[in-house]
Length: 300
Image (cartoon, rainbow, N blue to C red; front, side, top):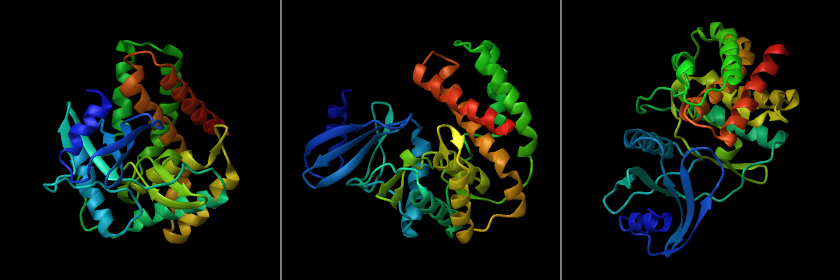
């Protein structure tokens, strides 16, 4: 279905007035999102790539964060109180549109996001829907077993991935503090006004898991320049994070390995969902970038 027709059909469930304009938001690798303007306001229109069940869980979790006044973009309820439609075989949602830009990486934005992440990790949540991390060791091990039968064989990439995994896997067995994590706090999943953070968005990968995973993933997003770890930005990030949530000694010891693990984990996501099935230059470029990052960190 053409995007405008899909938007028009979705809006029949909402009391937001007629569509005036829409424009595609192009950043990111998953989902399809549009800024839409109606008679009554501005909204984010999203075509989810995850299942209806997972989208509904995400919205239930966001309802809890909204009660805690956490800075995020929240789904809008339709005329019957529902926040998800199922149209054209995809879950569809409207969200509050939060104005802002993807931030520049500098000491102020890095400190802002680190403090926000620590706030998420210390938010008192009495209940969140049960959901496991889509990037976890058993998923990676299973992916490697699929390499020999991949319909898009990439032997050099597969060999490098496997070698890095064998080096990292022994460090992932420690018991660490767990809680609600976002799972993908990268610059394009945040909105800033200048150096001030307005919202963390796109909680699609939320789950209950090790907090260190979220810390390391966010460092991958905010503390690398030219695919190399910027130690000055890392120091600023950790100082701001630890002011609000002091990390345990084991977390500090394992952090370098988790920075590598989350880079490899992101590469596994792109491989599992895309590259083992078909060639895609954009996806392959991103995977190689992440693997080279992990390789460089292991040799540093």
